[in-house]
Length: 348
View 1 (cartoon, rainbow, N blue to C red):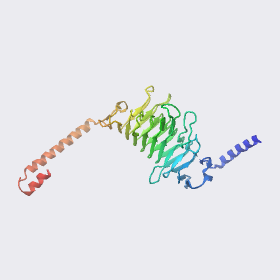
View 2: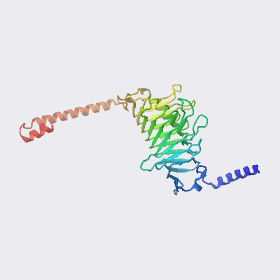
View 3: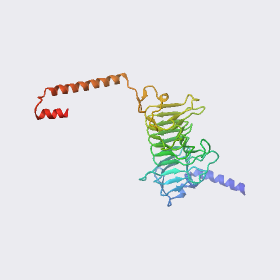
View 4: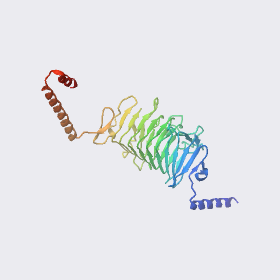
């Protein structure tokens, strides 16, 4: 009887797979049957995109499978894991999730439940991405991790194995032994605008893959005196870690970057941005500044001026000086008496 039950289950799985029953699930229940309740509002667009709007703080384990296209509106509420050892959100390959927060406060938060439990040396990541993740707004708060420095268990906010686009919101750590974002060797991450706050001893960003930063604020939390480097970028044995930065504001404590000197193919390239330490000093990042760029005394990475630009500026300054001299000469021709002369002299 037991074998028959297993056979029946396999057949049902195969049958429903052919029938393409939707498998996007909340706490193990298909979204097609989960429906609306006091905690959430679910709608479906004509193109098949599911929209999940939170109406209250909830404990969910949301799983997206191949073909799913979902938008989650945190709506100012908290999303935590339901299963003690599970991720609140798991995006499977070829699924797409957009996370936003359309509330006035825009402080909807994805974080661990109080009773979340580590499995071996790690907590399940808050968001595990094997598909496409667009993070538009809201907060990811990594509030779990080990209590002993550099000792397990460890915790990760967003664990990216595939494609990640961050265009807003905040990713932060508020417990030791935690990373806000872990970009794995197979991951591509594009950060266009967001706030990353390092409240842990660990770097708020760990990069093993390809990462491009075009803007954002990256900072050590106030009072965090145990912080190591703000960003760590280390490749694997067979793949380089690439980190290219075009702009952004970076404030670290111990340092801005850490990369392993054992792997010469690791690449950090700074084409812009401002880099300072919490004490107001400017770190030496010359090793990461490509030819044609320089860092000024304020920590800004800027393009070096070419000879032609310098010549043009000199000519401009010279022309400006000549114009002032001509203006003064013209003023000298004005009679130095009367109201008109007094006004001109005052304006000059």
